[in-house]
Image 1 (tube, rainbow, N blue to C red):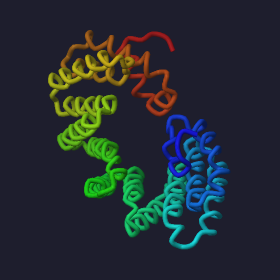
Image 2 (image 1 turned 45 degrees about the vertical axis):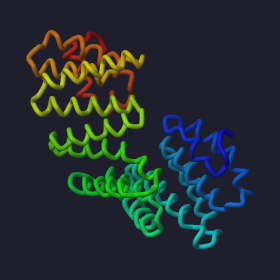
Image 3 (image 1 turned 180 degrees about the horizontal axis):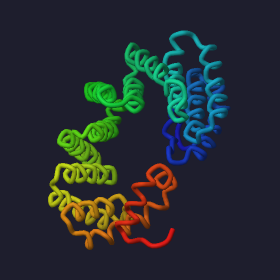
Length: 298
């Protein structure tokens, strides 16, 4: 085990829920007899999250059932954090499977319980999830609520949400075609990540900012920023980024440089067509990339 039992959350690898589940299962026997009885039901909620990330409804519900049984065996004050986490993960399951209200009722319970009991990290989590499952002004309201809560919190763990929140707010504003406001949000996001030396996330924020510049009919400025990103990625020995190539192509196309844009669209397609989700859910975008890149074959 890499961390103390009460810090098992630090073992999370959201990109690999299968491996994370196996690590968490190693904690089960220890936490069953741990002096802190709230840890075992919390572990079950995170095992449930592993399964929801795999879109395994039955597996997730089984872990949630174990969590609820463990929670109900606790004294009322001890139930607070495990119950908040239970509702967060039940909500996430409903959201990922697009069932019922997509978890709205559960996220609202988690939000109210977390706020009332000064559980700032989980309050921000609940508000950010409500921002994800809602749309338009309602989504923006929840994202801003989460942002303000995190900014004002004295809990550094709650503040750790801010990078993701600035990103979410930026893309919500983008969806509302409020590109100038989105630009400001992505600039703030890049600064936040730079201050924490998280350069890869900062580059994503920088790319997002560049896209907003193009959508504001400022392709020359956008291109300059994109070339800066490309140079930094090269210096940091980061792999070629299909999204970066696509956006450079879009900027060149916006400037009327069709021939110059084609190699960038071709490069973007060659990288991004390996992403099954994109090929399935963004098929028109991928076909456009393929066409503009003059890519032959299937």
